[in-house]
Image (cartoon, rainbow, N blue to C red; front, side):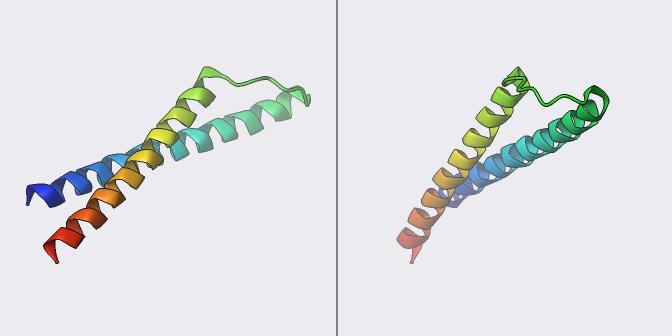
Length: 80
């Protein structure tokens, strides 16, 4: 039971982090679109701290999904 619980927890945490990252990206994209309509400029504004944090959250989420899947596959092979 504990061997299977660890991959499930890792997968759930990874999924939640990915959902948070995608939600933040969508919110930021909508805010950028709204701001561009009022500014009417096409200048590169650089990466903000929110961009960096969203990237980190998405990388950690994807990494934990990979690790969780590896644990899950490994534990399934042992129980068979």
